Length: 391
Image (cartoon, rainbow, N blue to C red):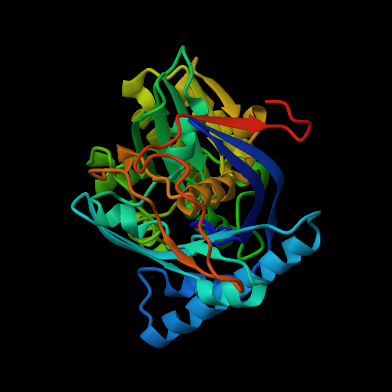
């Protein structure tokens, strides 16, 4: 169960995972998105920077998110053929503390005790902080899946996630990512602008139609590209606290009047420009895209134009649903934690790989399996299986 930077809902993935020596097998049984309970998304957005909040509000939100995840687990379990063994719930990120290129902490809400209490299942949660404590950014942790999944002769290849924040992983032939980092906003600023432009009728640019009606404003794009995040070298990470509604207001105050369609077109171009510019030094031959941005034709067209002859495919074409890839990633990371296997790569900036997260027991005594691999030895490949058993 996961919710990204845009907090549109709870992404769900039911995944059957196995570990055979150096190979992880993965069969994706179900993915989807469940809505937040009424008012909970608004409550999440209200505590995000630059808003101020209280310890009481954070405490209440921690419980409410945990309860919402527990209810979503129960809804999912009701339609499964067999009960799951484990819930992985990374929580809703409300603050990612990056200063001068270093991550000092990352806070996710969604109390796992409620999930364990309501479902009776053990829960793996809080997966980012251990990587941060080891010197990493706690992001993008999708680099672990990408390194196992995309390694093959003829690379390098890049995975691009177009969620609220855009993240990329560049994978070489041998499986270790060359780099993995957050390039900047993907849809988070577009969502803010879409809600404003449509006066609350839309929470996103459906089918990219708002951007398609506008023209890229060069002066606005230039000011947007002055953000200090774009002048840092990976490993770097960022979040909505850096690309907030307040930040967009500051930019627009500098530029002056901008029409709604032109604003949408320019923000779309910003994402395509920053992703393509970030990938340019690595000579990637394939780009595999996932996240909500794949459903925005204007964004995908702008990205293809910026990448030129580089082939773009979606993760669906390689067996992982584009809308579910983040939740699938968390399932993989929780599975590795359960088996005592490190869930990170050094691409996050961490000095060493670490086993991630904390485990909350369910109704039964906690019985962890023996470590599946020698400690600190990660698998080398991921094999995605179809429901018919193929690869």
